[in-house]
Length: 165
Image: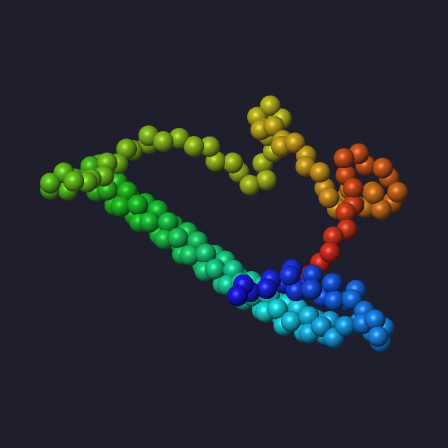
């Protein structure tokens, strides 16, 4: 037997509500049965939504935790590289190699350049990057439409909302 979907059960409820007993003028008895089946299936569907939501939240928390751990390990590795470089510089040794030549490190003194900007310093426009194009603000557009202003290319759309408790 094929299991009935929530959609199938909703269709059964809609069909049975339109069927009237010709003798009594009442809705046929199968209406309450169809409604009970729908109610039971809907509860199971809501339980699935809650369980899946909890699983996703748990996975997101795990990913966030792992990203924090990865970030911490990357920072620790960079500090360790700085430590090795500082020790090599202090001893005057600029190159070390594994006995078999499998790996090594070479310290290039004063080779790399970078620009450091002081906190709060301002610079002329010709030394600055172009600003990003402005993005539309949905909050401001909604307020303008609600105030009666016509905004080309935008409209307020109402949607249904299912709340799972």
